[in-house]
Length: 361
Image (cartoon, rainbow, N blue to C red; front, side):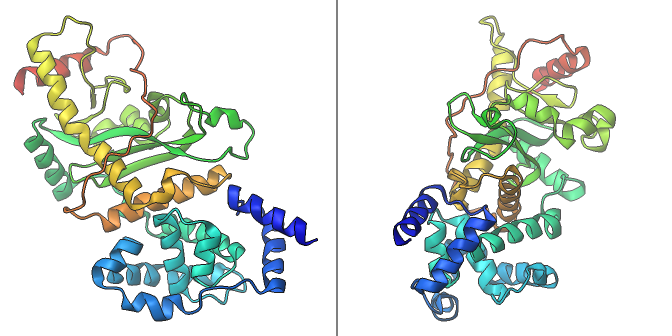
């Protein structure tokens, strides 16, 4: 029996199989029987000794921000049945899990809980962050829109609302009807994260969970932003303003992309492309900061697409909470270079608008 238990733990270490309730119950029962050593009183005795910078380094949020999260989630915390874990311990354990690539067992031992308890609390934490703190990701309007526009003006591409791009979040082979759909062009499993950010690198809209095999343009078509641009574009993008993206995206009246370089671009068109690419780099910076702060996103050891999407969305919300102007930009590539958007019938209005901008910058 001991050999079977040891093998089960080995598999769990390799796969971090935290989503199988029966397996988790078995492991938790075995831990109780064997009295697996834990780190006692880490939250009570060690965390209070952290300096302000050390605390933020380990949990990404300040102590005050963590208290705000605890206050927000407190009323719904009791949804976890028979929980005996203090809410502070739960929140700090979940933040630690998302911030680090430490194994789930290592995090569970550090916070004096079982692996199954950590799994339950992590999924509940991400769900509640998305449910009760989603307002931290919102479309720029009013003063925020003016601030974003000013930032893009300074970067040399005027009248821009936000920038859009996609990135890949590596995952395990998912449990779904068609797991091979999540195999991207570089032959690893991933989900698509489509992000829109303002000039301060704050996410203003995200869409996550689409298969890694999808082109950025296809993932874009399934975003709420694309739907609104088709039905009521000026409710998101005021007249005379636009979103900017790279060559993977379609050219629309409210979405500017570079001119396709066919070897015959004018000097003005090449200058337009340089300015657009320089301005839209903020979304690449946003993804880089996101992945450097929440290193679990370098490889999400989950199999449920729902749980994966919830974890990524929660990290994006927390990114907006903890973003600081002094954050160092670390561009973390995902290794998947998207192909240019295929040739399509010209959108005459979009072409004229792009030419107009090209003549002005």
